Length: 255
Image (cartoon, rainbow, N blue to C red):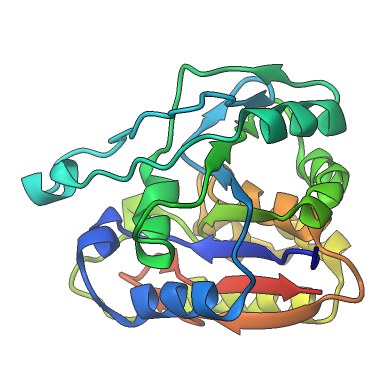
């Protein structure tokens, strides 16, 4: 079996799930170019809890964890099967984790996968972002997940490098200067494989402070970087900021 890639997607607004735009086309292009996964392990910013939790529900429910959007978005159904056996393998790899089916497939996952795999025919299971861990510990968990790539699992992180909803401007196409600067700072470090500087993102100073108030949208990137390997080929997709304070930049690591 060919080793699966690892991908981090800048997911942006949930409205992308019912729109066609440059970002959704980019997500579809990823699915078209990579091998078909046996299953997808989703690490979404929107399941951020105390502890590392992994779902083994054979039929995970759709979670509509967003408010104030058109009814069309809440009518969208994305109902893939789960992957209980692989969830248990993941729990063993991570070590200090627990099975938890109180969540499901949230919009950080389905808003993207509905564009990548619209038939919902790839099993999906989620792992939480552990609020109790620091950036280095997120990265180290990612390293423990690498074996899943050899089992046909697409490790899929969903968040945003820049995510400051308090500064979002719905009438702005690009990003504020500080948002673009921080997005480029992280991009440069990833291209150079200087992951320690991504982990220690606070060293970027004020632009890091402005880019997010809490780190749950940034943390999935750390899991993905940990799961990547030195020999992987890096592709950067949807390379832009939008609405002033959101980065859509995405990273694909292929063996």
